Image (tube, rainbow, N blue to C red):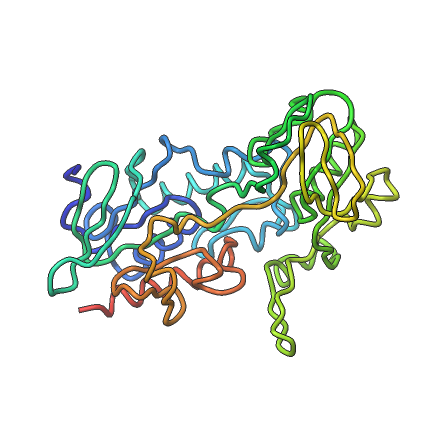
Length: 339
C-alpha cells in the first residue's frame, strides 16, 4: 500500500463531483487534505467521467445550479455548461482545495476490522486501515446494457451512449436510439441533422421546460400511489421530435441478427443502434449489508462507511452538483462527530 494512504482519518473513493464535494465539506470542518483525509480514483490521472461524454453535451441545469456552493462557475449564469467545461471546473475545484488525488487505484471492498472503529479498505494497490470511507464512485458508473443487445448484429455500429462522441462515428443511413430519457432525446435531436433517426421509448416521460430542470430533475415517488415516476424529459418533447422528423417507436423487446422486435410485435432492421439505456451505480464494491441497510441519509449498515452522490442513499438530486453538497455536509458532520 502506498504510504500516502495510511493513517488517515478518512479515505474518499472517487474524485468526481461527489468526492470533491465531500473533500470541500471536510476542509470546511478543518480537516486537511493529504493529512486527515485523502482522495483516490480508479481512473488515469485527471480522466473524470465528464471527459468521456459526447462533445456537444450540455448539462440540463444552468451554471447557477451546476457548481458547488463553495466554488462558483464564472461567466453567464444562465448558460448550460458543456461537459469539457465541467471537467475543467472539477480540476479547478481540486486545485483550490489543495487535494492531490491518488489516481489509478480502484477500491474493491471494505469491511469492519477488530473491535474498534477501524475499517479495512481493499484496493488494487493493497489494503489500508482507516476510520472512515466515503463511497463517491458515482450514480452513473457502469453502462446498463439490455440482455437482447448481445444478439443484435447491425451492419453499422452498436454502441452504448457512453461510447458516443460525435455524429461522424455513426455510419450514414438510419440509426435507432434505444431509450427515451434525456440522453436519448438529446442524441435524437443531434443526429437528426445527419441521419434518419428512430427513438425507441419504453416509458413515456412527462415533458418539462429546460429551465425547470433544477427543481424537477430526478425520479419521483408519488405520495399517493407510491409509484415511481421517471425523470421528465427537458428541452424537446417526444411530439416535438416527431414533428422534426424523428420516428417514435415502442420499446425493443428482442433482437436476432440485424432485426429488432418491438413491444407491439413490429420489427425493424436499423443500420446502427445507440443504447441510451442508462447506467448502474458505482456501489458494487460495497458489502451487501451496506447496500441493503441504509439507516439515514448517506449512512450505511457499516459504521464509518458513507455514500455520497447516489439518490438511493441520499435522496432525489444527490447525483447533481447542486444536490450532492447536502450529502457532503451530512457526511462531514458525521465524521467530525465520530469518536
